[in-house]
Length: 419
Ligand code: GDP
Ligand code: IMO
Ligand code: MG
Image (spheres, rainbow, N blue to C red):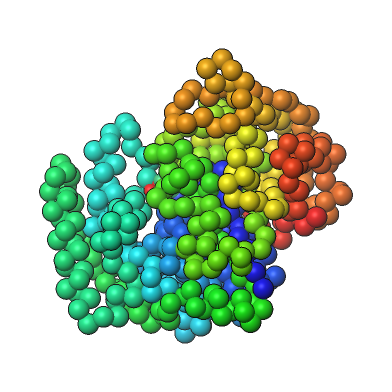
């Protein structure tokens, strides 16, 4: 069998968690392959709402294996806290969840370095979630990291102290006050909890399972425009969020990748700094924020809102090799008389549909489509959707050349229409 990849095609928060939870029944294994607790994946079912940061979104389905792959950066303190919110007994959880020995550890001093770096940047800050993501991936790439497998070694405390001292030396060059002890106690308690889980070389596990005809779903975090290579650098996260990241973040070869399921919102949002061509600063932007409850699942920050950006979507489809599109938050657009979609950009007086390098001023060129008024949240069949929504879907499909095979009409697992 193959590994399907589900990932975000915009700036994150496309509804990945909801959709992964909804389609988990069709898979045997759900795996995270990059990112860390910067992610906030919201799930709703049976009247409950849960936000996951590190744990894959298949965790609520018994008899499914969830795996945290090598490409993830893991904060033991967040891990312990999060598993306490799931309502699943630890004994059961240790059967459902396996962790890669090669995943890197976010240390308390990484969080402090993240905050110190953002403060130093001032107005040029990334708008990081302050979860220590950047400094941890920096240590990984510079070959200075500490990994999950290290917690099992007898000299782990010594290694921890060496790494922390290294960070403290770096921190001495910042004008930044911090309290390391505040984080350390919870962190070591988290390490203790982590050690109760199966920590293995998950690349063997994934490949063995695929050889045994098991189906794996790789769950992306963040979104394509936050990818370290292809996003709006430097206003990005520190990992490869695109489909290629699933190969390196799991140890699965491209030959074993099946469908690439690309999720996008029916409009756009972004948290943190950086370019966002279709951002709306007016009452319509506020209306989208209100109707879509657009506040960050990890930090609670208001999300910046704007119309759908089709050149951006097409770019994301290209770099990911998307084979099917899933559109979420369609219900949020109900009630608008007209819906704008960006079909090209004006850059330096010229019309183009390529995302320009860096922060080149980019003016969106819009086409307006008629809206729909109906409440669509109770609709279960594609054919019953309002004609203008179907026309909106057709317009996107014609522009991108990729079919929209799933439409999400509400935050609940059940509010999902398969075509
Ligand atoms: P993720 O990071 O991609 O998993 O997305 P988030 O959970 O950060 O943000 C998506 C938000 O939209 C969450 O509050 C979800 O509960 C909600 N959501 C997901 N799909 C839909 C949908 O189709 N309609 C509405 N109204 N809300 C949705
Ligand atoms: P999910 O998985 C939206 C953004 C931050 C910031 C930039 C870098 O829920 O879609 P980082 O903490 O990674 O160094 O922050 O990336 N960011 C996200 N935005 N959704 C996310 O995750 C994000 N994870 C990071 O706001 O702009
Ligand atoms: Mg999110």
